[in-house]
Structures are given as C-alpha cells and as structure tokens.
Amino acid sequence: MNKYIFPENFKWGAAASGIQTEGITNKANESIWDLWHNKSPERFYRGIGSSLVTDTYNRYEEDVQLMKKVGFNSFRTSIQWSRLIKNYETGEVCQDAVEFYNNYLDEMIANGIEPMMNLYHFDMPAELQEKFGGFESKKVVDLYVDYAVKAFELFGNKVKYWITFNEPIVPVEGGYLYDFHYPCKKDGKLAVQVGYNIILAHAKAVKEFHKLNIEDSQIGVVLNLTPSYTRDEREEDQKAAWYADLLFNRSFLDPMVKNEIPQELCDVLAEQGVTPETTEEEIACITSAKIEFLGVNYYVPRRVKAREAEYELDYFTPEVYFENYVNPEGRFNPYRDNNEILPTAIHDIAMNVKDNYGNVPWFLAEIGIAMDEASEGKPDENGIIDDTFRTDLMKEHLIQLHRAIEDGANCFGVHQWTFIDNWSWTNSFKRRYGFYRLDLETGNRIPKKHGVWFKELATTGSFEG
Ligand code: FCB
Image 1 (cartoon, rainbow, N blue to C red):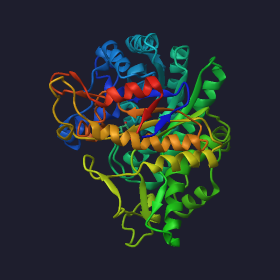
Image 2 (cartoon, rainbow, N blue to C red):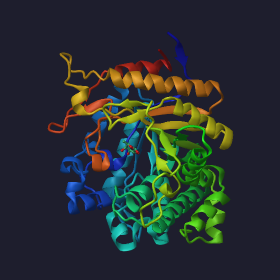
Image 3 (cartoon, rainbow, N blue to C red):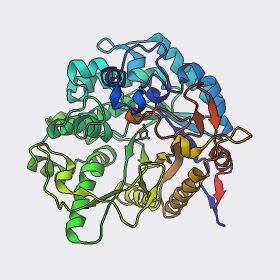
C-alpha cells in the first residue's frame, strides 16, 4: 500500500453542463439539441432528448447539498446561451435565467463549492444555427462574444474560473465530419472553417474578458487531449501519429495555449485544399489572447497506424493521414463499448503540457468511468449502489496523475465526469458516470459507493492504494 498525497488546495469535484442537467423549465430559446431531437428522435438512444435530465433548474438547492456530501470543493457546469439570451441580436437577457444562475452560484459559494463556469458546451442556439449556420459564420462568432461579455458582466463577481469552450473540436467532428452532432454535415472545408471560427470566438472572448479586469478571476479553455499511440516504432506509424497529433491536439492547443498557429498545420490544410478564410487582424487576435489555465478531458487513448486501405471518403477528414488502430494487447472497459483503458496516458499528457506548453496551470477537467445501469446493479439494503469498478479505475488514473505532479506537472485539480448521471447527447442515458444514479422514472438521486471514497479523498487530499 502506498499513500498518494496531492498538493494543498487541490480542487476536487465534478463537471457537468447546463444543457445536460438543467431541463427546459422557463428556457428562453431552443438549442440545436432540442431542434435535432424534434426532427430526428431516432438518432438518440431510446429516443430520449435533452428535456429529460436531472432538472437542476428546479432542484439545485438539494443538489448542492449532495455535492457537499461527496466532498466537492469545486464544480464545473455551463451557462446555456439559449437560456441566458432572449434576443441574440439585441443582447436582451432573460431575467428568469439571470435569477436562476445567480441563485445557483450563490448556493454553491455559500456551501464552499467554487463554481467554474463554461460558456459553450456543444449547445449552439437553434435560431443561430438555422439562420446563419452557427459557427460556420463570423457573425455568430461576434454574437458569441456579446453573449460572453454579458455573462462576465452579470456573474463576474461570483465566478473566479471562466471557460470559453468545452472540447471545441467536438462540434467540428460531430457536426461537420463524422455525423454525430447537428447539423450532421460532412464537409472537410467547412469543418476547418468552423474550427478556426471557434478558435477566433475564444480569442475574442478572452480579450474582452481581460478588458473588464475582473479582480481575482481567470479565463481558460477545456480541451480533450490524448497522445496518438502507434502500433510500434515503424516510421510510417510515427508519421501517422504526427499527423493525428497535429490535427487533433496541436490544432487547438497551439493557438489557444501557446498563441501560435503551427506552420505545418497551415501546410497540411493547404495541401488538402481546406484552408479557412482568415484576416490578419483575426490572426493577431488569436496569437495574442492569453489564457491563464487549461482544462484537460481524458477518457480513452487514441491509437493510430499508417493507412493501409485506400481513403474512400470524398471529403477531407484527418483520417486521410492514418487509420485508427485497436491494440490487441490493450485492456478494455467491458461496460463502455470496449473502450481501451490506459491510465499512463494521463502522465504522458501532463508531460506534454509541461514540456511543450510552458507548464501552464491545468486541471483534469473531465475523467469519466462509464458503466451501464445494469452493470452498476441495484442499490443494496442501505440504498447504495456498488460501483467499486469505478473507484478502482479512478485510483489507477490518479496514481498516474500523482506521478506526473511529482515529475513537475502544474496540475491544480481533478473533476470527474459527472455529478449526477446525466443526459449525454445521442447516447442519452446509455452510459452512467455519476456519483449519484438518476432514476429516470422518479428523478430520485441514488448514491453510489464511489462517493464515499471520493469524500475521503477530497477532504484529506490523499488516498491509499
Ligand atoms: C465528453 C463531454 C461530456 C460528456 C462526456 C461523456 O466528451 O464533454 O459532455 O458527454 O463526454
């Protein structure tokens, strides 16, 4: 048995998002998720859309108490653009939303839970998608910045950690390459433009945030990062991994953290005929918008090999340069579509941030261990669900994070995905990740054993394993 001690004032908690938790009570407008679910409910697991969620809008007081019970000292969620802003053009806010977010934030703060607020978690307002193409358009970039400024002005005195985007590459992949987010387009050139426009929206919001000079408040971004591991050392695989890393990691990390646009990225995009439209002024903004911290989401490692089969799509995707690869010797999670389990990736990510990104302060913003409801089983006689599988895996990942901190990683916290089992896009409630189970029929929150372990971890800042 070893004892793993984490730094003082480490942040412990969970992450969630507005749309995945709040529910639709009193919502000013719809997001693309409402719109898409209305159009195509069959795209969602068991047909369940984002109206069946944890109902945080009505239950936030009770839920903050549940956060305390499992020892959180911090919590990330997001403001919904489509809840806060009533009229996107004039910027008129929905007073009910202002009241709700104020109350929710006050409740967290009064209970010793530091709120970290994200501004965009895949939830484009439906109207802006339908009228202007969402982030396809630079007009929407500016409307996002107006919304961000509104949020800073309204809640800036309560929120010390602002996040511009969660996993900004995911709406690009889902909406424009691989068909798992609305608008379900498959267009490599548009995908690159959307990616660029999101980076621009982030940079402009960061600049506006700094102009406001809000005391004791910082801004950052949350990226999903994984190294690209290869089959073996052969040169063509190393090259494949280099491309995957350039297109999936460095494409966002370099501009957002280092304020650099890699020349190699420009060359690759030009080679593929998918160079986005940019202006000098925009590039100057992107290359000078400094963030104070980074959030890293990690679930599964990416594995690639050199292309063997011919590339068959008639539009650009990063897979032009590699094929995905399943490690025959890998360990897999039987409860999540056989996803590979690789805790050492956390150490690799941390060393990359340390060595190549100025060791920017960062936190593990999502680490999620999925199980389905059947494998978590029923509550025992004390009403608790035994999810020891989750705790054991969490320990393995935290041991790697601890090793990284000993090796100089500048990590200041860990947030698990998620707090109460929540609705997860087209997967709906297929996978469960929470400290509490959500009973879909009654809305009851049922505690899981992992929370007992986590409370001890969060309150002592250490665990034995
Ligand atoms: C992440 C998302 C989050 C959640 C988990 C399962 O990629 O940030 O919203 O759905 O996956």
